Image 1 (cartoon, helix red, strand yellow):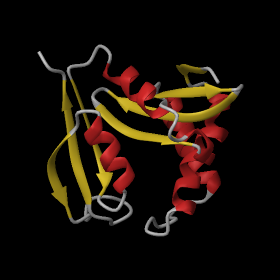
Image 2: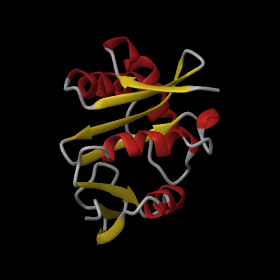
Image 3: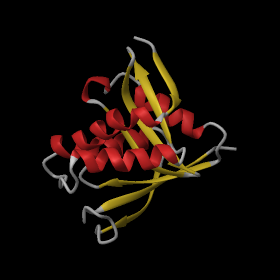
Image 4: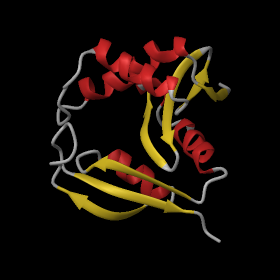
Length: 147
């Protein structure tokens, strides 16, 4: 099925928020700190700032990427959209025209860590999680365009 990447619109906040909130519900190591409504509101703010690109498949939002400058804030896919190359398409769109990207991934999120490492991100630091809302140990990753 064809995937289309496009800038998110305000009306996408519900679908994007549901994908984000669903991640916390499906991972027992991830604390569920916010309600679904709070996740939708948060995603609406990112959309309003122009940070969000959505991947649309079959007329539905299958995933999204939020980038502010060189900082990747979020990259999440619906469960049905995983392992189809959609995350790679979103990440490649963020890399286009940039020399560097950086992000944090939770240490417990082994799938995300493998994904980013496969796409050229390198671990540059680890933390005990004291500086993130979830209080979970995380890893700082950086990707730099090869010259």
